[in-house]
Length: 185
Image (cartoon, rainbow, N blue to C red; front, side, top):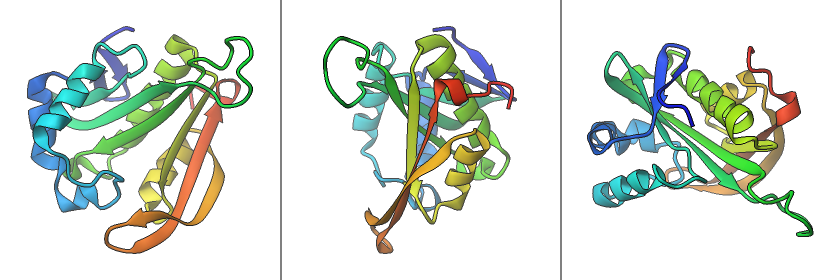
């Protein structure tokens, strides 16, 4: 993997402990946790998980830096495909993506750049065949980011997602195949 790497105006790279301390300054704020599956995180466990990912070949988690400030995070987890397990084509064939932007930097297109960078890593470097991402249906900003990246909505789960504030709400799953990916778009 080539680090650091440019994603629009952002620099993506593996996190350091200091980066994670800066992320934790905003990660547990209510305006951030509102749309996350894992709302608040315990700081030491959060640091351990992210730092252990740096050496994990199946985890390509990054921080997004702009002019020396950490403005977001992104995750790309390599997973096995589902289906019949003959041969090895299904091993490490797919990925799950996620992205998060600091609330003071929301609405500036940074999530779109983070996702574009993750797709570049997934398809051009890791050689995955399919990427999926999910969000609460009411999280319009998140599903718009996935649509801008060329991902298609494949599933609309009716009241399939638990939200601490709203109870059972709808969820969306998006996906894109390697041959559908347009690195320029």
